[in-house]
Image (tube, rainbow, N blue to C red; front, side, top):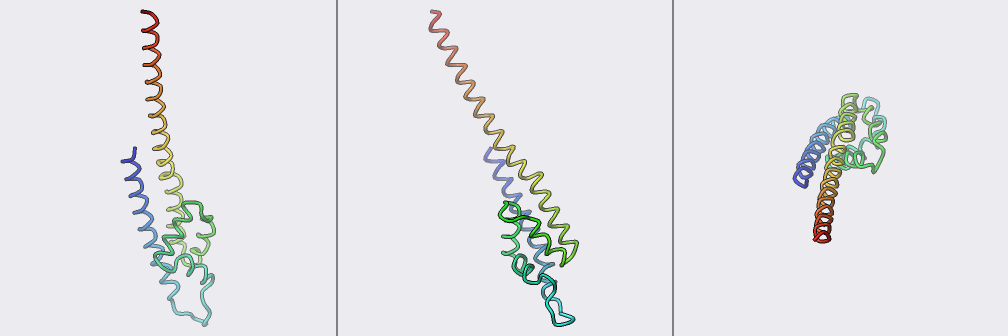
Amino acid sequence: SLHSLFWLLILLASLLYIIALIVTEGCTDFLQAPLSDGQPPPRYADIQGAYGSLWRTLYTLFKSMAGGISWGENSDPLLEVSWIYFTVFMAYIAFVMFSVLNIVTGVFVDSAIQVAQRDRNILIEQQRKTRDSTTR
């Protein structure tokens, strides 16, 4: 139903925002860390481009979830930051792929089944009326 879908989208948006806050915090700390040899950290440009601000992180997480870009490409730079942020990202992808998207699919399948059942009931009623009118 639309009610279930609405709350599912609220859950998904909340999860997206919370994960984005966590990952952005870690990445911006990593990017602002003092450089020991004057060289930027490894994959600095990749991390800055994907996780340099909250909006970039939200966009990156959305693209990873929706298939706009491979989540593997987005997770590799996080290994340079910390295994913790990499693990958070992987948990997000696993949760979204295996639970939330299956729930969305279930909502649509349930709606299709309900429509098919209504159509079947209408057809049965029409056949009953036709049979009753021909037997009289």
